[in-house]
Image (cartoon, rainbow over all chains, first blue to last red; front, side, top):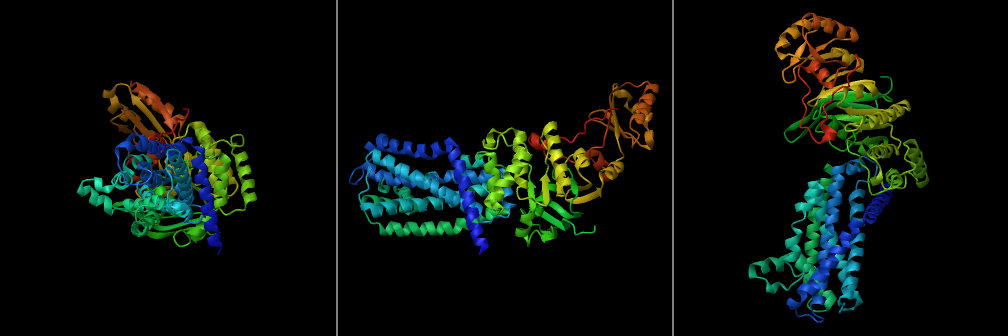
Length: 256
Length: 336
């Protein structure tokens, strides 16, 4: 029983440590928040006029769930980098030689990143409201959308976390470690309706997890389109990805 | 050994793919002693330390720290050890105090005990003034001290220092040596790995020499230096064509045979404990033969000398990495 209480307190210590690090470096905060804000403005104002969508309230209501999903996904960059850096610098070595609970480093990482991500998502929603976005499906669905985005982000963090632990080099991670996120987020329903893509691209877009998740989020936010199908597909994808990458991440961490 | 050893290693083996890092090493460390694990890059020192600190699982053999098996009782081992690796493992965004307190809490110590120990360590390592500044603002030496402090907050009984002074300037080096001596005086068992004979000499009561994953010698620093032939006299012949004459001139000095390094043109000969007398005798002989020399120096045996004596070849240096790892272990010359 003491082991469990230690596991919890150790995970909280690590969470506190990770959040302190995040707060202390202005660049991290800026990067986490500024980039999605730029995307909102870019797509809303620069591209928005050219992209036609069949959604009440116009493109901005179509766009925001996509941006929110993308923000959640890219927030995992920091997870990968922090873990890669930790492995390289010997910080994780030091932690692994302590009598702390073995789950605490990864748990603390995920919890801290989940908190950070939630704050970021709320900021982006606020920015969305400032440029005309509105939830059209009632408060329950709005909260559900944010929770789904959060869950999506956490699963992506598990994947990038594993990559960070495996690559162990912060610069390599930044250069190509997360390059797979780009086709997944862009070739999806995040910014445009997939039926505007050439058929071969559309085949990819329609069947990949990001599209499912964002379709579900969009249906929750706008009230247009079915929630059930994309939601269950999305959750199934996320569960499968988690089942594969969480153990991989733990193994990479243990091997040190 | 009357009481059980603090560290016991038997037949430890570890390979990474096709590379055999450890081929079966055995040694013991008595409680309260300081033992130096001496060897060149790639010898297996860090691998051994990582196994002993439960970071790595061996392929074979066993190791006990404070009587606990590092593989099967790893959790207990971690309560007694401290590890300072080659890179400082501090979180630079956090303050000195925060760094120590977080590690302290991860030792499952109560909050006020953590605070007490943190203050004591900050004072001991002269970091009190900087305690509440981010570690990023610390000088390199301060970061090192903070790193050492972090290893001590759990009050370990067995301390592992992996190349503690590689890459440090002489002042920081001496500072680290002082701290190690203090800890040894307090009864902490210390296992330090190093490439530097003078460091092992200065700090360790016993030395274990390893190369290519094997123990090739054990003994006190003096015993090893004697086996290496004692002090080394070196000089360069100004006129290279006279190298052969120079070798003949100093042959038999102290009963030893000189050797010449083709590349640098330097000639060396072990002179045992003869020291200054050997220098005088060598200069006299060379002068009598009309040979001009440069850079006559007398120095204590280096790791290379020890290896030359023990294995018949120089300590092979693995790839020279960035400055912190690639320094050739040269000994400072002794005043002749």
